[in-house]
Each structure stands twice: as structure tokens, then as C-alpha cells.
Image (spheres, rainbow, N blue to C red):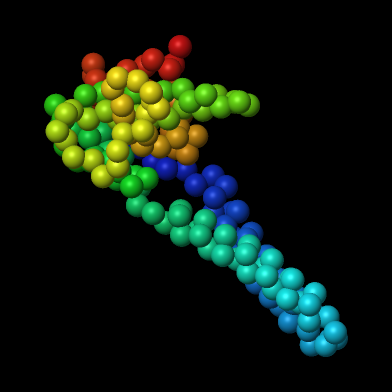
Length: 168
């Protein structure tokens, strides 16, 4: 079973930034051609347009990053947010949905704890303090599937390794 990433507003926001940057370049050029004394204004428009163009380009490139979370009876495959793990379930200590304290709304993340000795590219970072630390794979708000669907998938395939501490 594959879990999919949702690009809800990321690509739209990226295209808005790129579009604004291109329009700002054209407007700045027209201002510079119409009145030589408005070069300072043109420079300001070009700088702001260049900034938004680069931010838009960065956001667009981030949506092209590889993303794969595949869950099956035989194990787990993770390629997302710089985390790479492929292995059978006995290498997974736990996988859980955890609540992250945010001031305005509830936010949930998918956390993977691997068995001792299993190499991971990044150091574990969840929770910031605690005995057993895990790797935050992805925020659930960035996935197409709902929290309930992900819970059902993980409960089916991960069995007792799936913890539902944050769902109550």
C-alpha cells in the first residue's frame, strides 16, 4: 500500500512567485525605458521580482523531490524528507502518529523508530526529549490520505509496531 504526498497549494504558490517575478522584470524594464530617471524604481521592482522568482523556483523544485512511503506485509520503504529506509518489519521498532504542539491548531506527524543498529541518514529528532527518539517522516497535513486512512493502513501492515498514542 502506497501513501501519497499532497501538493495542495505548494505548486500554485510556486507558480505565483515565478509569475510575479517575470511580470516584475517586464514592468521594471518598461519603467527604465520610459523614463531614465526611474532607474532606481526599476531596480527596486527588479530586486523584489527576482526575490519572488527565486522563492517560487525553490518551492517548485521542492515539489519535485522524491517521495515514497510504501507499506506491505514484508516491510516498509521510506524515501522522503531526506530519510531513506528499506527493510522488513523486524528492523522497525515502532511507527506512530504523534501530535505536535502547535499554538493555533493540532498538527500530526508520522514518526519512525528503527531498531538499534539500523543506519539512518539523519539523527533522530522526535521527541525533543525522551528515552526513545524517532525520525519525523512527514506531516500528515502533507499527505493525500486522511489520518484515519493512514491509521488503518499501518494497523493492518505494521501490527503491534503501530502506536496510536496521538489519536485519542
